[in-house]
Length: 170
Figure 1 (cartoon, rainbow, N blue to C red):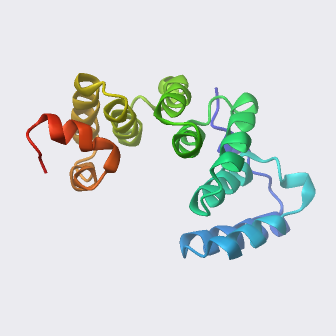
Figure 2 (figure 1 turned 180 degrees about the vertical axis):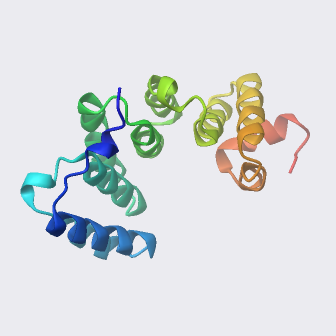
């Protein structure tokens, strides 16, 4: 299947309003990003990149349930949008727990199997669920794909059970 982000509407007004919302998001101005997102013309609000931005903003506003609902619904329409699985799983981790988050993330494996973030986040959920062997394997794969996750892993609360099993590391 094609990447749903490649179906970006070609409309100058849309590109400007989306760009403004994305700019606020990049500057971590979540409320302004949310307001900018609401300025997007109604006919473009269901574009996959707009939906993704909504989920990401809601996650950063810690509006987990809304993000999970929107993300799950969007995945029914855009099942090949890998990054949306990660964002939706993040919301679910906070409102329904690691098992629900892992189930959504695992459903996107075919679109994410070569992405370090997929293996890293899956390892976090496995660790939180007590699946420590799977967590080790997932972290190993994530580190193989992107070494930068090594530092991130040191401060990840979901990995505490894994670190504890290794004698308190880090």
